[in-house]
Amino acid sequence: MAELNSGDGGGKKKGHVRSKKQNAGVDLTAMVDLAFLLITFFMLTTSLSKPQSMNLAMPDKEDKPKDQQEKLDVSEDRTMTLLLGEKNQLVWYYGLPTAPIEGPTKVGYGKNGVRKELLAKKETVKAKYASQPKKQDLIVLIKASKKSTYRNLVDILDEMAIANVKIYAIVDITPEENAMLKKEEILSE
Image 1 (cartoon, rainbow, N blue to C red):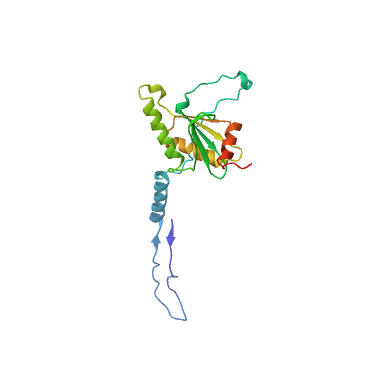
Image 2 (tube, rainbow, N blue to C red):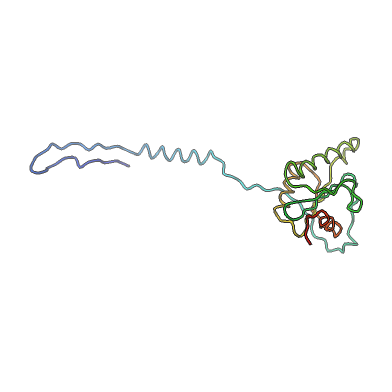
């Protein structure tokens, strides 16, 4: 048992006889039990922080040459391309790189940058294809330059989740798009 003892209880001192007093004892067993019960309670009721991750499905690498790979045709009026440059900047355009319907436009990350553009284009596509439910989703192509950072890619994937863009792909950037980034002064030589 856990006890708290105080004093020596009396006895002989300098020749005087004193009456022996009882020690004041405090039994700490109940307090120790309570402490362990509280610790156990708080350990079981709190949730530990769990790592958060986003599911990302990437296709397997194919061994076929590029000229033999199947090409998937998509409507250029529902395709938005995001070009990730250096210094936390990006350029987006709507349509084909050779003849964009809209853009190229330089924006930043966040709610007043690329998220605003994604939500606007998503509504445009939804309104344009209101009679065709299978074509109401915006298609976003994410193309990272060699000078963009991993954080930029993670940020743009977060923006896809926040804007609830269902169809997006990470693809290789073309030389024409690299030239577009240099023209917009987002990519240095």
